[in-house]
Amino acid sequence: MSRTVYLDNASTTPVRPEVLKAMLPYFSEQFGNPSSIYPLGQRASDAVAEARATLADILGAKPREVFFTSGGSEADNWAIKGVAHANRDKGHHIITSAIEHHAVLHACQALEKDGFEVTYLPVDKDGMVSPEDFRAAIRPDTVLASIMAANNEIGTIQPIAQLASIAREHGVIFHTDAVQAFCHEPLDVNGLGVDLLSASAHKIGGPKGAGLLYIRKGVKVDNLIDGGQQERGKRATTENVPGIVGFAKAAQLAASELDQERSRMVELRDHAIERILAEIPHARLNGSPRSRLANNVNVSFEFIEGEGMLLQLAARGICISSGSACTSGSLDPSHVLLAIGLPHEVAHGSLRMTLGRDTTASDVDFAVDELVGVIANLRMMSPLYEDFRHGKVPSLLS
Image 1 (tube, rainbow, N blue to C red):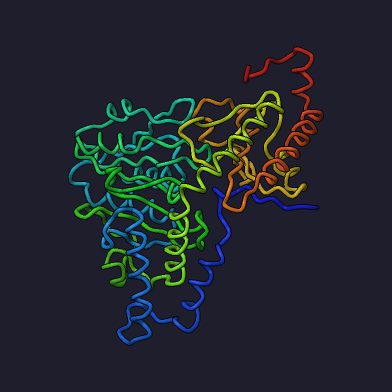
Image 2: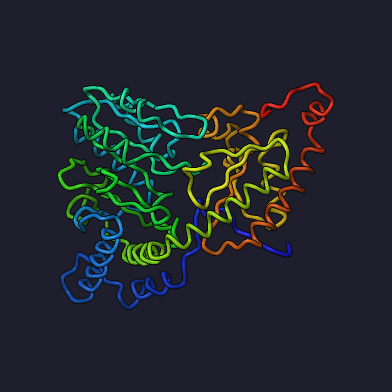
């Protein structure tokens, strides 16, 4: 390969040099346990407290409302299971959407086995939750709603402030999975009106294994992990001090660059979308064209299979993901793409390109150039495309 281009930043991002530098002392000379009372431990404790204050400030929260986790999935599970069990005396109904991350969907499914009822709201063709549908789904026994701030596959940004306001009118606790939106979009917990919010470090140039759950003061949440008194007795286990320090540093950098980077990536994103739709026939943009994450491009291509597309692009040095779950061992296409109404055949031929702070215009053009050739090659080998060319089958995207 003459070149490697990484365009899978929604999956994970490289740790920034400044973040690594901030973390390194806490692996070695400042290795103390934050629960210890001697100076070595107290220096670690001070670092955790400073990181908590930094992240709280970015969210518009109080430091005591920020709890550290091992990542976004743990934060989602804690929010959903913790609220449901802590408020079971008030009801057993939960509302979420059909396009949530599996950390939310599987947590809700686990609660269904425990006697809870879950309403999975549909979305429109752009992946948007309807506030009217949300309001109509609320019941007297609804205790929790969880709607993601922005979708990890198609990039659609939800009207969280409006949904949270409706929830508040009815006394329903509101959680948002903001893993993809945190430090990519402005998020203020008070402006949004959310009660709980999940975020993760490795989506913003921080380390894997570090996340947070914001819990508004007064919200009842049962523990997910019991044991010691860490995180004020709410989440046991010795704190991941290097990860927490790195999370705060990454968030501080990303927040300071948010407006500039978002503007730059919107330009690159729109250029990629324009080229793909203009140069590759029988293609469809997935997700909202307007209310969309700045770095997200998700397109479906008819008459191809996503796995073959990924493999050919990888052979050309392009790191990218598919809207299809086939590469994870499943034969089923993405639940998100099916939820927005794509036929199975089209959903299987989907691509997600997510840009990062290191992505250049040259990277985008290189990837699109290669993609044009790959799609053409795959269609040349496709019996279905041959049938389409001879008028035996219709286009599902026409």
